[in-house]
Image 1 (spheres, rainbow, N blue to C red):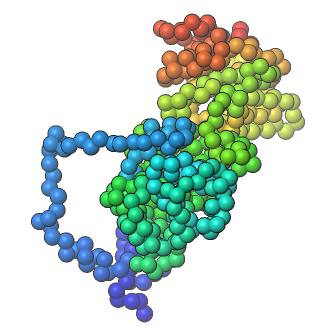
Image 2: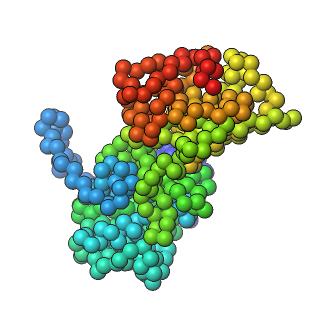
Image 3: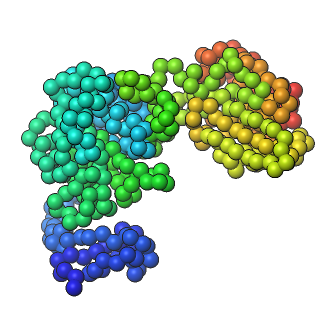
Length: 443
C-alpha cells in the first residue's frame, strides 16, 4: 500500500500518482516519475500571497554590476566570457579522463594564493587529491578539502567559512538526507543543484559543478540541471591525445559557443600557447590539403582540411570533424557541375586537430581539398579558401569576413579565394570565385 505522505510526479507532463510505476499513465514516458513529499506541497500552498513580489516597470529596475575575476588560465577566461563571476554556478561535463577534475584542481591551486577555496570530492580520498595537487603546483593553506557526499555537510562548511570558490566533484555523488532516493537519481541531482544555486547567490560564492555524461554525450541527470546553472561547459577531445577543447554551450555572463584550447602536460591542463601547430602546418601542405578559417564564438581559428580520394570497387564516404551528409551533397554537386566521377572513388575527409566544424564557411576549402587529392596536385601554401557552396553550384559570402581575413594575414597567408572581393582587403590578394566552375583556375 502506498504511503499517504508521498506522491509521485511525472517530470514530462506533471501528472501525479499515489504510487510509483515505470511508465507515466498520462503521457506514456518511461522512468519519469519522481518522489515528492506532500508536506513540501502544503508549504507551497500556504504561502501568503500578500508577501509576493509585485511587478514593476522595467525602467525602474536597477542594473547590477557583474563583478568578474580571472581564473588565471587564459583559455578558461575566454570560455567564461572574461572571468569568473561572484555568485555564479558553473557546470562542466565531459567524458571520463578528459581532464575536468585536473583543470578545476589546477585552477583552485592558482587562485588559493589570494582566495579561499573549498574542494569537495565524493569520488577520491583527501590523500589522493593532495598527491595530485602537489604534482600540479604549489599548494597553500587557503585550499581546503572536504571528502564528503552529504549536501548538508557541504552547506554547513560553506556557511561557517568565508569561501570564495567551491568545487563539487561530482554532482552525481552528492545526496541530500531530505530525499529518500539514491545519489545520482533525478530527484537527488535536482535538489542538490537547487540548494547549491541558492547558496551561490546568497553567499556570493562561485561554485563549479562537475557532471558525468551519458553514453549519448549529454550530462547525466535531469535536463533541468542545465537550465538551473548559469554556465554550461563541455570538454571535448580524446583522453589519449594531448589537446583538449572546452566549449561553452550556455553562458549568462558572456557569449556562447566560445572555445578554450588546452594541452595536457606534466603540470596538468595548461592553455595552448601556439594553436597553429595544432590545427595546420603551413610548411607541409600536400595534395589534398586546404586552409580555411572558422569562427568559434568571437574567436577566428585557422585550420587545415584534408581529403583523400582513391579509386575503389565499393566506394565509401567517411568524415571526421565534418558533417557526412554535407560531404555527400558537395560530392554530388561536383559530379553534376564538374563531371568528376566520384561514384567510383573512396572519399575520406579529416579536420586537423580534432575540431568539429559547425558552419558552412569551409565548404570551398573542402571541395578544393577533394579536387586537389583527385588530381594529385598540391595547392599553394599561401592560399586560403572561404565560402559557402550552395546546391546550385554558386559560392556565397559568409559572415564576419574582416575577422577571418585579419587572422589569415597574421599567419602569413597572402592569397585568399572568396566569392567576391570585400571592401577592405587588409593588403591581401583576393581572387574571386563566384561559382565552383571558376574554382578550377586556381587548382
